[in-house]
Amino acid sequence: MWVHPKQLIPGCRLMKDVVGKTNNPIVMKNTVLAEQHIEILHAFLIDNVEVSDRLANGKLFVPEELKEEDIAKRVQVEEDLSFEEMYLNTVKAYKQVFLNWQSGSPINMNQVRSIIIPLLKQIEQANLDLFLLHKYSSKDDYFYHHGVANALISGFLAKKMGYQKEWIQVGLAGFLADCGMSKININLFNKKGTLSLAEYEEIKKHPTYSYRMVEKIPSLSVEIKLAILQHHERLDGSGYPLGMERSKIHGFASILAVSDTYHAMTSERIYQPKQSPFKVIEEMMFYQFDKFSHEVIQSFVKGLANFSTGTKVLLSNQKKAEIVFIEHSHPTRPMVRIEDSQEILPLKDRQSIYIEEILV
Image (cartoon, rainbow, N blue to C red; front, side):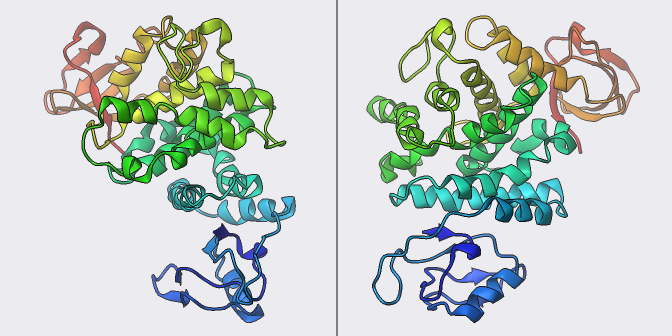
């Protein structure tokens, strides 16, 4: 199991080397921890370590939950890191807890909150970076990036839509939405080839598994649990696992649906190459009255308008350009200046050309 050093006690046995920033082991695998080892882990600001569920004396190890002040201290420490560093650290921690869930461990909400809340607190500073999270992942590690990105984008949207008290909880829902994938057969979860129809039907059960994993967690509201269950439902009833229609789908689930779809479609996955963020948003706008919430899509689209004049972009014809004007009625198709010819091109009039990527 993975635990924070604050939860360790003498007698815990390490299951993996604890590696520092230099990639050299700080404490070796199979070490039976003493007080001095635990002090070293604190000194090196290690976030999580993997230990046996049994102490060296054979007794069951049941770690105490982290206290609120310990979570707050981590937030303060991580605020000194860049957004990218915090994001990548959080993805690494998400992978660790997901492996715990695959091994049968229940969700530890204090641990979850200590992992994702420091990053959620950076949403205002990150802002436009949230549209570019797909840049960090590859098809091999996409799943772990997706859990963190879903939390960030969901929290961002909820906050922009005025949920000033609930936006953190919505972010937590995004983080936990795919926890049920840990209950899918591991051979299916790691499969590289195309899924059969039966295998895809099994994958479609993961929102139900996720709901069962969070159902009895008292710190999560009923609305957040519904959002986790319904995050793949669509307004026209074409979603899963229950095929619900708009009147029965909670608003928080609609937020998760947009963030989940956007990051998935813009990221490189085993079965699908990544797509242009602007093209994906255009497609989602097309379905905003049938599959996705109009209100959520509009809140998301407004964020695009924050890409300022002067932003460098790559067009689908592989020409580099610069945004010179964004019309609020056509946020995905601004007016751009072509770099090599200085031609001014209004993309709303050239539907065959679109922004492939933001250049940063």
